[in-house]
Amino acid sequence: MKAARRPQVRLPELVAFADGELAPDGDYDGLEFRDTDFAGQDAGGARFMDCALTGCALDETALRRARVLDCVLTGVRGVGTDLAEASLRDVELVDARLGGVQLHGAVLERVLVRGGKIDYLNLRKARLKDVVFEDCVLVEPDFGDARLERVAFVGCVLKAADLTAATLVDVDLRRAAELDITRGVDRLSGAVITHPQLLGLAPALASALGLRVTGDD
Image 1: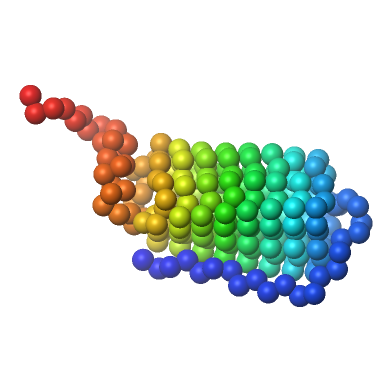
Image 2: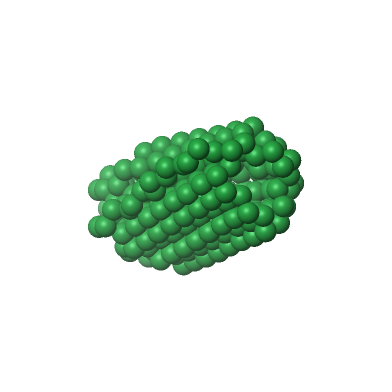
């Protein structure tokens, strides 16, 4: 089992963002976005490098194919944020409150998601490498057809996860606070779990194998 490498983000001295709105294909370098409402704005294809976003609203914000590099996002919130096919590298996402985030087809490398709660996270066909979910709550995350390599769930509550057609390599689930997989339990090859977790997953595993379990009589 190879451990996930965590991001080591060291932000430079930042300049406050003062342009009002984001722009498609914009280039944002060394900026601080604080308590800014980006609801409904379009920043598709934009690049964020060495930036801090704190307390920002991202409701229906379009960030499709954006590149987020060496950034820290703290206390961001929103529903329907579109990050499909985005690239996140060396990113820390702290105490987020998000719902319906679209990250399908995205690439995440050296990403830490710590604290907060994310409902209906869509990571279908995404590629995750060196990603840590720590002390957060993930409700109905969709990892369908995704590739997870060196991914760890530490103190994380995982509710109704979907692993359909996913590929797992060195995925550490042993320290998950709660492990609930409703679909794709047969894709757990490449992951490591504890004996108590195995017992908890037994009904789902039996169902996936077509195994009927009856009483002694």
